[in-house]
Amino acid sequence: MVRIILHGCSGRMGHIITEICEKDTETQIVAGVDAFGDAYAGYPVYRTLQECPAADVIVDFSTASAVDALLDYSVEKKIPVVVCTTGLSPEQTEKLSEASHKTAVLKSANMSVGINLLEVLIAQAAPKLAAAGFDIEIVEKHHNQKLDAPSGTAIALAEAANGALHNEYDFVYDRSQRREKRPVKEIGISAVRGGTIVGDHDVIFAGQDEVITLSHRAYSRAVFGKGAVEAAKFLAGKEAGFYTMHDVLG
Image (cartoon, rainbow, N blue to C red):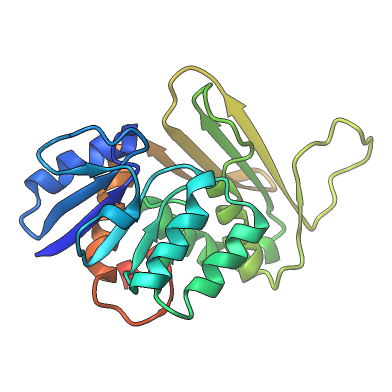
């Protein structure tokens, strides 16, 4: 049984992960962390990590402002941590890397199994299609409450393509201020915000007289929760190091 501390338990994703773990015989949430410390879903909830009992792994779906203290605690207690919070600053990303030298840290732009497999497919397709003259464009769509644009997932998909192309391509987010033909070595990334769209990502390979589109549609946030729980089971007991969902998938 993998004992989990759920950091950010009272948020939307915290509720989803709680429901998943209730049905998962291999995991148990032993404590939650929430700023208000309200009792929730059959496990104790504390205001701070320092009040929590022993656990095998921490799953974090909180806010960027809470991540620094989370990493400090994880390093201090040598507890592996799955960081699912987005919108981290460059300094926090560096802190993630530093923490991984002392404990196990798992971070991915998207916890969905499907998105992470999509990255693999993109890396396989990009060199062959680019050599055949195909342009690469990415369109992502999210709900109207999302604060950042483009999404971290869209960037990760672009990086999967660019990495397979020796990082020779530039990312372009806005073409409104230029008047010129599309350069060959660029990846355009467009963001759509509206309604309650959970998350749509299209990676478009546009060639002469044909288009190939690799797509992912998230119809529920549960796909991210399922991935986070699988990551927690994978990370528990692991040695210090930096891991991603690609390690979980093998």
